[in-house]
Image (tube, rainbow, N blue to C red; front, side):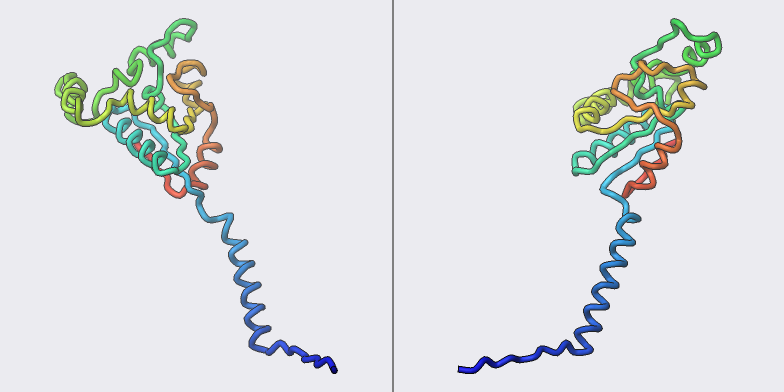
Length: 191
């Protein structure tokens, strides 16, 4: 019995298809590093109650959907996650700044409709039983594994210490914030 050997010839069309596939694979490899990851970056400049609670609702919603969330707090936004008013050991100007700022999230006023100081208690009353408080949202964010960053220049300018926070924080600069925001699918700046 004889063996039949068939020669397989790759057609020009098959060679063209293989070349096109290699080109597409290379293009995908080039594009992949520029595709944002499944991350959300929220930069909070504001120390207003309504803006802070909105930031935490957005952060917790994204984390609940399985996204990696980083919140960057700068200047007045730092007051949202402060433990309280700490004055001991601070320079005179830093004491003055800390006296003028809210001590913690419980002291934040709304950006609008403050009603001569009763705005926050009014909002807390209206929210009761309808939605969780800002403090509960902050606790939930920590439970969901959200990363908290605090702007190091804000610490030195505003006179905050590295141990004044209700959540564990990474003290970092603007470069770290940009590294996170530029690699995120979505980035929000709340002022």
